[in-house]
Image 1 (cartoon, rainbow, N blue to C red):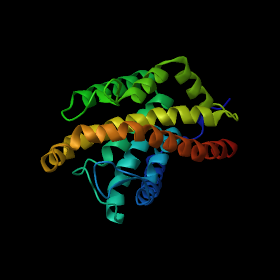
Image 2: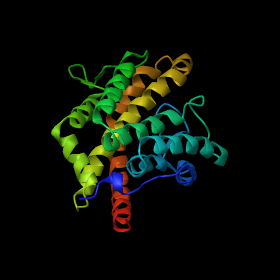
Image 3: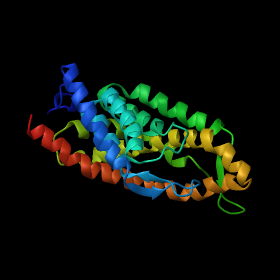
Length: 248
């Protein structure tokens, strides 16, 4: 059994710089391509680059992946992708890459702590909502899927998923999907923090009814978005990992 750690060995600074350069450019190009619309920000959208985050983190590790995505975000701005969140656009994807890289290459404990802290910060921010009313009798937690993802991460399912990614088997795609969905939900939390911190006050000033209406819309949409991103990442990442293993 070959681990992900044996797939790539960045021994020299020149190799690291080359990988960061290539990954940054690819990420920047993918950022130009839109995917889902960004609720609450007219004309803005997520990008197809989101599917690269777990792939980068698994192949290159937490730090190279995070640097590549951070640089790629600003390079994407040069290529024509406008910055929306007052320059903090890099944060969700960059922290997500660091998070996934820690899970695969280091230790799940720091990653789980990052996830829990992010969730707590998001819940405590003004304009966020803990419970979303569905009707007059029923409310559901906005962060139900994030909480489930954290529980999966620290459970035996998380361990099994990591092992499936590290194994050279036909089940790699399942492990990659689980880790990708946990990672993209962490990205969603950081994105929510950035969204509220940079645009929340402005949106409320021009539309006092903006919140909690935005969260009521998103509670049904974000699970579909995150599952779709994780599926795409798993489908892209699995053949890449197999190719790297076969060429080792």
